Image 1 (cartoon, rainbow, N blue to C red):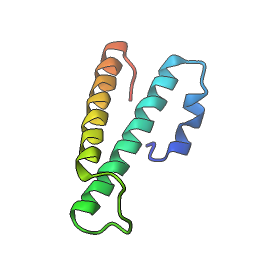
Image 2 (cartoon, helix red, strand yellow):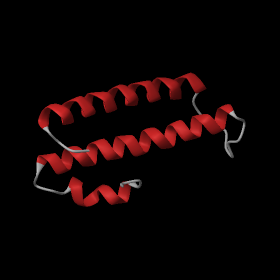
Image 3 (tube, rainbow, N blue to C red):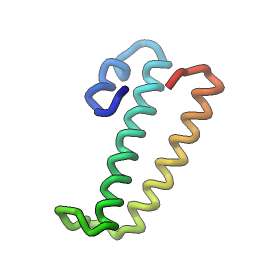
Length: 83
């Protein structure tokens, strides 16, 4: 299971588009999960820093990233890319 960005380097540099597709998906999913985790901590009052942007901006970003993940998952199903 890929859980860190550094684990996607080999896939990113592959000559196979399916590997690069997987790298794109995994990177987005990792970033989405980290941002969601930050927002959950923020909502619980457990952040160790003060975010620069208003909370709703992060929510907009999460929504956009979630939509992008869904698009990539649909493409993966159609193109038979196992994620």
